Image 1: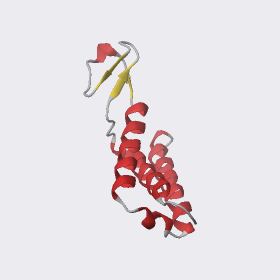
Image 2: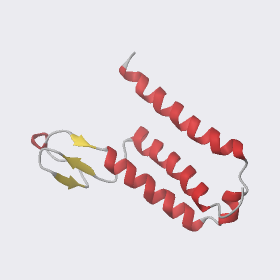
Image 3: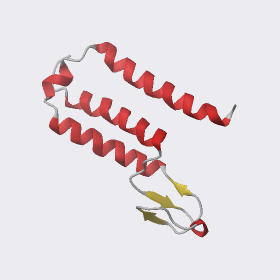
Length: 104
């Protein structure tokens, strides 16, 4: 690998952060379609069901950006290629296992 490893660090940490935010239900905010509003906390049931995906996505992007800024770029460029495949595969497997609860 050549160049800066910061995109690699961002990608790996954002992938892990997204999976944790999804698995542990930690959205940064919620979007209520009925009210067409964003909220940092839960709203009454009259507001409708929240859309959490936006909050998970922004949370992952923020965590990835923070780690990419703090971790030296040479760390990301020295990671073996196996890590670049194992982390996304493991987080995808974790998401599948989490969603398995709907089918059992």
